[in-house]
Image: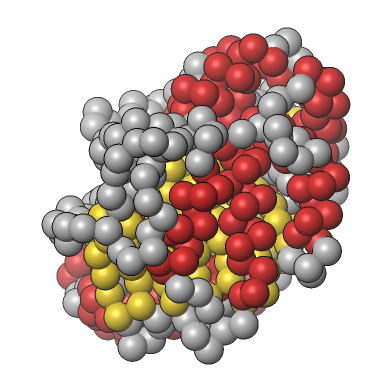
Length: 479
C-alpha cells in the first residue's frame, strides 16, 4: 500500500469477529469526562456502555455521541502503544459508474491539508513522535488510522479527526493526487497476481459496483472534478456513518473527550442523530452466469482464479465456511497445497479464500503457475472441489480446520492494530461485537455435517474462471 493511500485487497472482511445479534440497550447517561455538548452552545449527552471485560484482552466500551458518531475502545494496560482508527461506512460499491474511484480518490486527498494543517504538518506531526499513519479503501468502508505511543494518543486523535472531518480539498491537490492515482492504477496493472482478483470480481458481478475496481480506472479518474469529490465527501462522511475505534493503553472517557474536542466546530459537529444501521443485506446481489474471462498478458506465470458466488457475512454458515476453506486451501497442510505444490510441484502459490459482503460473497481458488501447466492445475483443482462436494471432509480434517480457525483468530489479536480493527468492523459491519470466547465456541460447535452440507452446496455450483497470462479467450472454455 502506498503511503496515505491504496485500495485494499479485493477480498472482503473476515467471517469472524462479530455476531449477527443486534446491539443491546445502552446505559443512560454520559461517561464521566465525556466532553460536554455535541455542538458549541448545544445540548447533548453521550451514552456509554461496557460491552465486555474479556479475559483474553481488555475492557471494551462503546459511546454514542449525540451526533450519532460512535466511539469504541479496548483498554489494554500492558501495552505502551495505541492504535487509533476512523472508519467510514462508504466504499467503492457506493459509487455510480462515472464516480468509480471517488472513495479512493478522497482517501488520498484527505491527507493533503485541512484548515488547521498542511500536508507536511499532518505527516510530520505523527512522524515526529515515531508514530505511523495510513489509510485504505475497500468496497464497503474506508479506514484512516494511526499507531503511536500511549502518551501521544491526544496528538493522534487531534490530527486524524482534523483530516477526516475538515479537509479543504484544494484544486491543486486534486490534480496532484490524480497523477498519483493514475500511477497507482498503472502499477496495479503491472501486478498480474493482483489484477486477476479484480478480473474475477468482474466475471462474477459484472457491472455491479462489487465488480468494479476500488481505485477506479483511467477513464473514470481522469475526468473526475473537485466538485464531484467534494460532493461525495460531504454526502457520505456524516457523523452517523462513522465509527472511531482505539485499542491499547488508554482511558475510554479520555478518548471520548478528546474526540469531541477535536471535532468541535467541524462539519462533523452536527445536530443530534441516531447512528446509521449496518449495511442492509437485501436485496441480494445478482451474479452473472458462470463464464471464463481471459486478460491476455505476456507474463512468465499464468495467474488463475476458479470460483463461484459464496455466502454473505451475516450467514450463520460462515463458521463452517472458515473450516472448509482452511482444509481446502488455507495452509501448507491443505488439500490443494499438498496436491498441487507439494506432491506435483506445479505451482509456487496456491490457496483458497472466501470474501463476504453485506449481501454477497465469493469462494475461490487462486494459483500461479507456468503457462504450460495451467490445464493440469485446473483439472486437479476442479477434481478436488468435486471430490469434497461429493464425499465431504473427514472428522480429522474438520478438527484440524477448526483448530486453524481458532488459532489464527486469537493469534491475530496480538497487536493493537488488529484489536482496533476488530472493534470497528464489529460495530460497522455487524452492529455488534462477539466476545472472543463466544466466537471460539461458535467455531467449536461446527460439526462435520455442517461443513459437508455447505461443501455439497457451495462446491457443486457452476464455477467461473479468470485468467491473466499469455493466452487468448479461445484457449479456455467454460466447463
